[in-house]
Length: 261
Image (cartoon, rainbow, N blue to C red):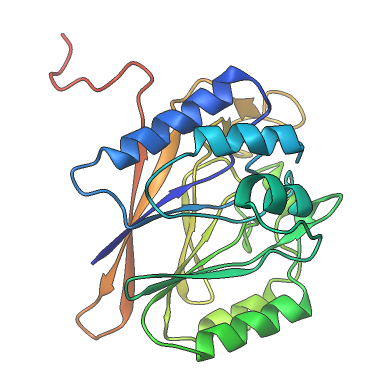
């Protein structure tokens, strides 16, 4: 069994609130009795893609655990590379592959510069196909934009456009245990191309569904505690790779071990 944590939509904005909430989640994960083998951030690291916001992110997300980050629509590819990852700035899609024991984590860049919605280029889909063919063992696939409708008045208008090419690759690979995304600011479980699709909660806020609140007013809720997802990758009895996900929040007031009166 491999344990992987997912955080998302931290939206570092140079203010104290979002940074403190994200740092609290990272500290909580590091202190687990069995810490995760890696942490996957599914995008919108910053609120506006500014270099100083990535500098704030680098301080708040400091951890001894392996941390892999995907680009979101609020991110800037060049600044993300230069000011968070410490690599050469470039506006090219930030597609990545990381190995954690027998697990491979593949991150796709679904961001489209200047647009809220997502899209995967033909080159990115081809790169994914080649990456899956080169190796063995389970794969977690991560990107920012959900490839399915989640019934959110905000998210569904800026989800992943034309998900069919990605669906064909996912459906055709026995290695993929599940697909992880962000963008929706809400813990959501669904299916995509026959595989589990897990949309991670935001550490910063919650976006309500269409049955709760009406757009454009009162869509975002800043009251809930910061959340994360914890993914367990193992094998089912038939030998197929399996994904089991637990959702957690990190209480702002600390842990309460005895039921209050």
